Structure formats: C-alpha cells, structure tokens
Image (cartoon, rainbow, N blue to C red; front, side):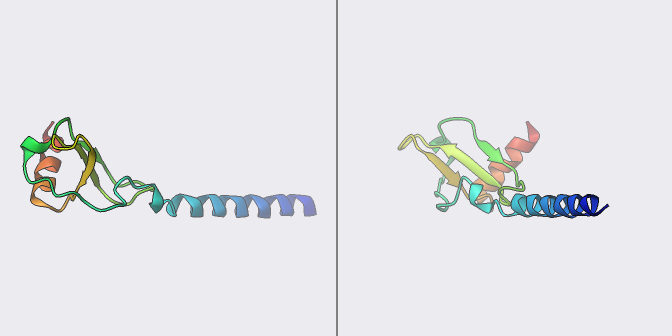
Length: 92
C-alpha cells in the first residue's frame, strides 16, 4: 500500500518537472541576436522561412538569405517587410 503511494507521488513529480521543462525553452530561438534590416524583396536570395511560435520559442521568426552577403538573417515580423512576407506565406 505504501509503495503504491510512493510510486504515485514520484510519478506526479516527474510529470510536473517535464511540464516545467517544456515552457522554459526560450533559448531555442533562431533569432536571438536581433534583426537585420532588409529593405527590399530584391535583396532576398532564396525562399523565406517562417517559424511560428512554439513551446520552445514563443516568437514568430522570419529567416531569409540575403544576396549581398549570402548569410542567413532574421527579419523583424513587425516591420513593413516582415508583414509583407507573412502575408505572402499565408496566401501560398
């Protein structure tokens, strides 16, 4: 009887600790170093990658590869270009 209670308590503690770990994963974001100011769609080399908010990263992230330096850059989703890219991805 006592062993069943101990197992039940340990199971509850395990479930609570796993749930706490899922919500603290904000360091898994790709755009931690800020945003790059891309001013034109012509400066985007490849298809835009948009990551929606998840349990690991609570932010919307827009990642592009620029033609000027061939690097992966993050675009602010609140900027005018970011809003255009989000609308384009929703219509496709």
